Image 1 (cartoon, rainbow, N blue to C red):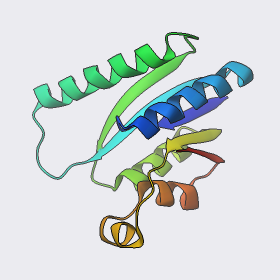
Image 2: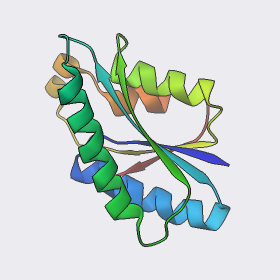
Image 3: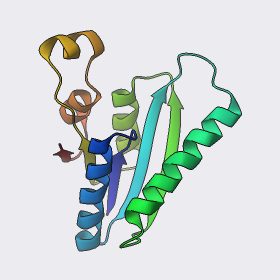
Length: 131
């Protein structure tokens, strides 16, 4: 089995990773921890590398207790993060998606959209949300 963990360095994403770790242990699943970032401006290679290293360090620390098989990826995309995560889940044939959610007001959702909402509504597999 393969589980996708949507990771964006928030406390909610870290909680989702911990829940995914527990599920992976039970189901003997492989974790793919992914952060999708929309390309708004050209990012320098050094900045991207630094972001990847920070993400890998955080993930390694959280998963160290059980050490399940995992992969970490930072995806730069022209799509929205939600669209990219759903596309990734489809392309990689994920069995389940884990993501942290943050409560937003109706105005906040209207102005900024919601990655979690998009993933929940369009995912090709079950989605586990963690607050």
